[in-house]
Image (tube, rainbow, N blue to C red; front, side, top):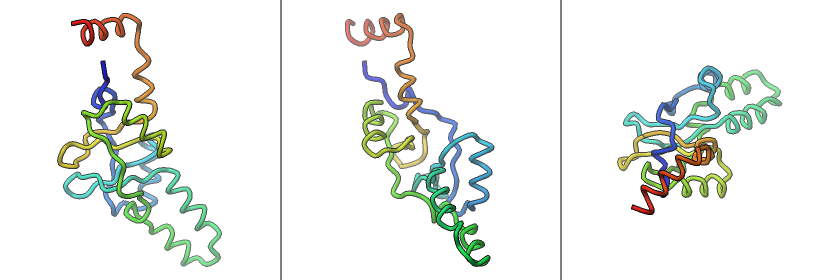
Length: 150
């Protein structure tokens, strides 16, 4: 009766490479309506995560810089500069409870999902975890009958 991460995750993930610029990421966040990006290397392996909070913190900290060249340097930041690494990840086979516990304990809003080789397979967010509970009584009854009774 355990729901796996693969059953709840989003598979259409917007990711960036380490060289993505601050401005590029800001535009993609808005266009894609996401709040973070997994950062992947050339092989598609997850090496970090950049969130709106990471970007905002850096931008706010740099906003008070008195010299134009310092501000331009801040604008030149990349995903590789801003990402949290190593990324905390889960596998598609992990129970959703594992993802939920990690998100709660680490106070993160999403986790990249990686395949056995470390490549990006999806992403699971707090909303994805909570969606597991948005089922009809009949769906729950059927799952119990299929997984527990049989």
